[in-house]
Length: 252
Image (cartoon, rainbow, N blue to C red):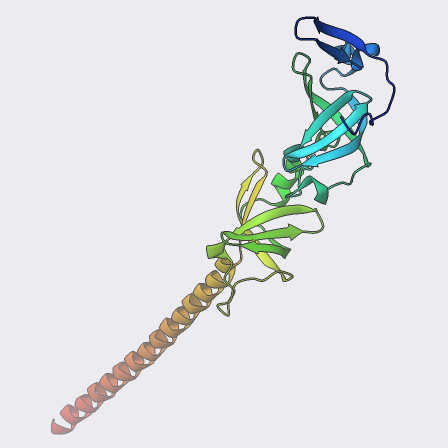
């Protein structure tokens, strides 16, 4: 209440209840002005576009003032299509003006659910062709934690996840924050906005291919030597046969 009035202020009020026996009287200040929620369904229908001023943050979203007496909530998941936002304060600041779309209106409970990301097209439709499974991209390691790492593809502005078991580099060390290296997409889900990456699989496959090539080259070399030995052996047999034939003719 101290944010609204101060001790010593003189205000007008409406008497709401009066109890003579207990000598209690309840007063109201808001009742002196029209209720802004009356007719709100016409002013803020679901799907309509507006803008609001950022007034407060919570861990789960941003409260916007649409007009005096009308506040709405933008859930943290409805701030951005692509960014992984840990706290709304990382996305916007108090007094910022945000464009929004009304997602849900509950007049009875005076709740207005808003969305900011819905003011732009969903880029994940295009990402399905860019980040298909098996495709490879350069990404920056922006964060590491117990289960893996968050990877940022700067050009598209999209975040992806690399599990811990896929973070190992060729030298045995795990990828580190700030590194910009190549990753392969091993899972893509457009509906859940999920991209899973692997760096490890790339150098392991390269090693396997190199080993396979070396084995093939070795086998080819062995086969070549065997072929030469066989030819040499056949040549010796042929020479012996010719020598035997001459000896037999000499005896005769």
